[in-house]
Length: 81
Image (cartoon, rainbow, N blue to C red):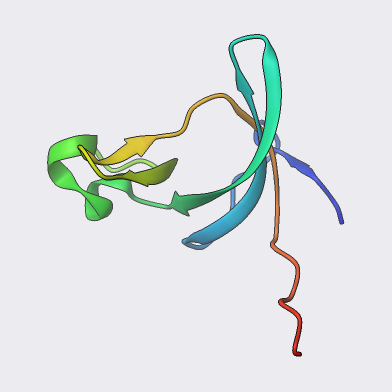
């Protein structure tokens, strides 16, 4: 698996990606959604400006933007059995 620095480039298409993010003083790994235009995900939450970004669903507010992402990678193929 090749990790890609978010400073080098972002994904070209919407979808779920494996990411490394900083949360306070910790680094964590997780699966997060990416959109090339957060406004199309939720105009109320992300505003009217067109910009790419990482987000996750939330039961209370709908979505929240995941910040602090330093690296991302394509998800591996799922098992067939």
